[in-house]
Length: 379
Image (cartoon, rainbow, N blue to C red; front, side):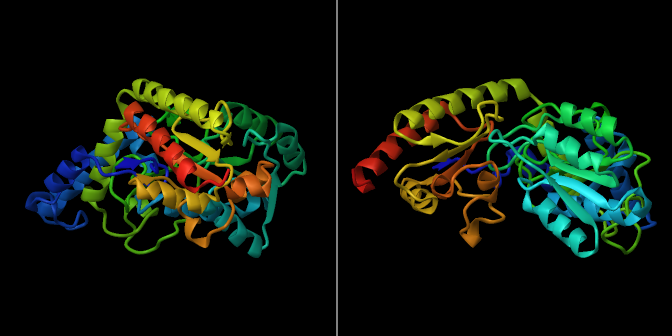
């Protein structure tokens, strides 16, 4: 099997499996909120995981909150910030190339009477600076929402430039950053990054599904999305799970090691596939400077779903649009927003790699693409 769909989800690592088994043993299986010694032990374990996770991300422990997924993190950050900070402004700035978790939150806010201003995206998938400045200059901007690495194209946000522009034109504007596809693939130090809130997902870094992290910079006020027993400093109610938090930490430890070496291997795979596929008439849609873990390519003569199922015959797994939108069978809104014509976008397939993919898999992939072209393409 060749699995090139790691932006959708990754396979669970052995280290994560082992950590979860360890954390389901009786001494740490009690409710962390219980007053007895088993509860205290569970809480001690949980807070230790929180401290270690914060350290790896360059944050303070009190700035880290465990959630069920990045979608929950995004909802909490975006809705919660606007709800809590009504005097900060009535407008939110973003782009139409964001993940659905962000875009749906913005649509929700629009229905609540907030003004949503969209910055134009260029062919490279990045916000157009002149458009950003134009929207900021209209004033009343409470929040800016962006994605560090686009999940469909791998386009990397020039966040340092974006942040500098926002802080210069509208200093009071808070910044939410989707860091899901960046985690473990590029260095992230939240103490230096400059974002006020960030979301992360466990199952994108070889943890299990059902765990994520929300970073809220100290001093930033956010209304909680989930109410109840007031766990996690009141920000995220619900019984804490040392098992899920530990699974996230185990995965984070693994992907935090050898980031540059893993990136070099991904670069080698990406460069090889760009060259070989281009020579076969495919059109590369990912920007030249995209993160090498994602390669969006349009196959001439094959609609995206057709190519997906042709590859599946050979036990090769890729995706069309984001997994969150795939079953709707729509053309990628991200590619259309970047200016890609609809026919080309309709033939687009996303290949996404992890540190565990190999050049042998890439070469085998090309061999089977040739076979598919020979068998199914009418020349």
